[in-house]
Image 1 (cartoon, rainbow, N blue to C red):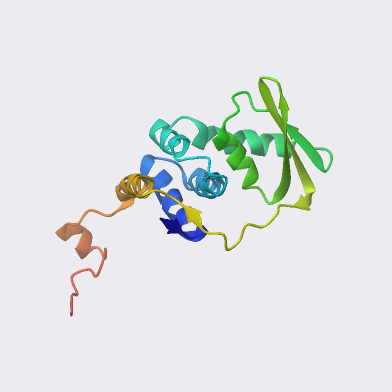
Image 2 (cartoon, helix red, strand yellow):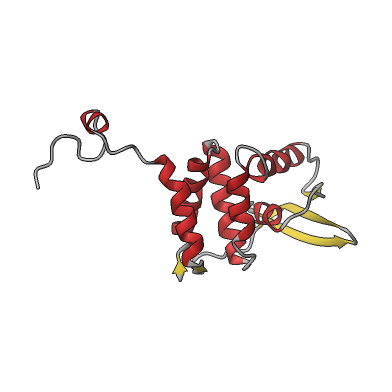
Length: 164
């Protein structure tokens, strides 16, 4: 099925929140999920990362990337992750900068050129399986307010004012 980038961004972000990620990491995961699906990298790494929370790549990749970028002294920054993965690459590709990839045998290095903006993929639709979307929805459901009298009396949903 075809989805807009905004739909996947919102759903993946909410799924990460439901799985226990803080707001910042959840937002970055949503952005990486879009890049991941744009590259046809498949859903398995996305789901595994959600299941690994509160540990794992959703928590660590943004911190590792931001630390390297914060130490940068020039426009081009080299990043060689300890454990390269397709999801880590998706995190890098979600940056607003041009990212290059070099294979170094068993390792992969990435060059982030902070002086060159990333190529735009705006408007390109994403293919996501019904199974992936259903799993993301299940994670996202953990963010829903319970449907109880107490939650309605405190303003959830339509509250106690149902005038249909």
